[in-house]
Amino acid sequence: LSEHVPELPEVETVAADLRRRVVGATIEDVWSSRQRLRGCRIDVMGLRRAAVGAAIESARRRGKYLLLELSSSRVLLFHLGMTGNLLLAPARLAQAPHTHLVLTLDRLAGRRAGVGDEALELRFVDPRRFGLCRVVARAAQLERVRELAQLGPEPLDAGFSVATLAAALRGLSRDIKSVLMDQRRIAGLGNIYASEVLWTAGIHPRTPAGRLGPVRLARLHGAIRHVLAEAVSNRGTTFRDFADPAGQPGEHLRALHVYQRAGQPCARCQTLIRSVFLGQRSTFFCPRCQRSSR
DNA sequence: CTTACATCCTGATTGC
DNA sequence: TGCAATCAGGATGTAA
Image (cartoon, rainbow, N blue to C red):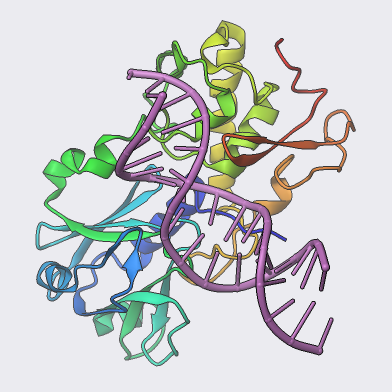
């Protein structure tokens, strides 16, 4: 029925695969569709200067952003938007529609990927073009990059404590569902996992974020880490759009408890799951397990 | 500082 | 059967 957006687990899956399959490869050529992505088109000349002849030194994730660090001391910053994919394909394979960027890798990368003595390509495909790709200066200054500087804490990092969460929510009157999706508060949660986290924690999505007491904060903290870790280990959720760089779907769809399950029984209490609109987005919850606080 | 809302985009789905 | 209207969503920019 509906699609889904790459959130933390999906981006982590892509980063992990790229780490395994293209770190060490050299970029030999760059091609772009020259179409607009999230407001601006890819700076092809800047990308060529940064990437051609450079090796990919690391593949990392920050929030929903993906970073490829190059030996040229530049970093390729990607955001997959709603429908973006980074796919690895042998050069002979026809380009999918809505391919906006192709990085041609060396033959060593092709051999590692098992496509024989053929060039391997890393392709950025994004039908709705809400994604982003740009070149930024070296890793040491990444925290100055505007997109990254605004991001809240990483929920799966060891330093993400109940106190970190409490500080992120303190004083906020907005509903907790919208706040969980606010990347400046916590990085990485989107519409799917925000609903899933609140179901797991037993918290009503309309609860004012700043009014959660110690008990519910602790439950929320545990739920954020548990839900995200499970989704990462399932390699993300696939409705239609998301695939890892090899084109394989994630396995987390069957593990979802509320998202897109309006009218179906809650796994804990059999009450029918409901959907409401919150912060302009569909939200799913169990009216019994997630009692309204007021 | 906060919160609310329009905007960007395409394709699947719904409505007539 | 066909075509137009609607909807989905993340991040950003603007306004209050």
